[in-house]
Length: 176
Image (tube, rainbow, N blue to C red; front, side, top):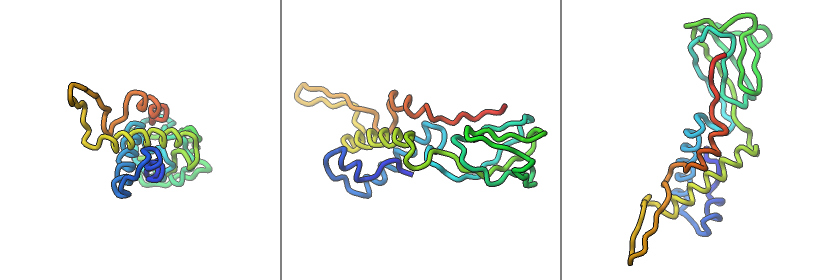
């Protein structure tokens, strides 16, 4: 899912980029942002499988907005006695542990909802990178002409400041 739209990109570069090019570029940049965060930042429903850690708590991606199903070795647990969850991403087994070696399948929704300030950061970073690539589509690192030399940016990747901005939202997965 792109974090910005083609109209925003056209306005930023003060010109018109062909729609298909701009849409592809914004999608590729969104993939780079999600890769940098270690997870999709936008609210997303997913099903994931975990190996039982032998502990009472798993940490899913955050913010967690819904857990729709939890299965342990194919047996569905109920939320009213088998587990609890928190917005911060904790999935806790009630009165038991997630048995070591068991297969835990969790269907859940996590990520930031539309309009969240965190997605505003992703939008800004997305537009910065897309504008940089639009201005330098061949990803030239430097150019010298008539004795004048210029050095350019990274192409599609995140620079250090952008990595720091996105790192705030990284996946915090661990077992407790």
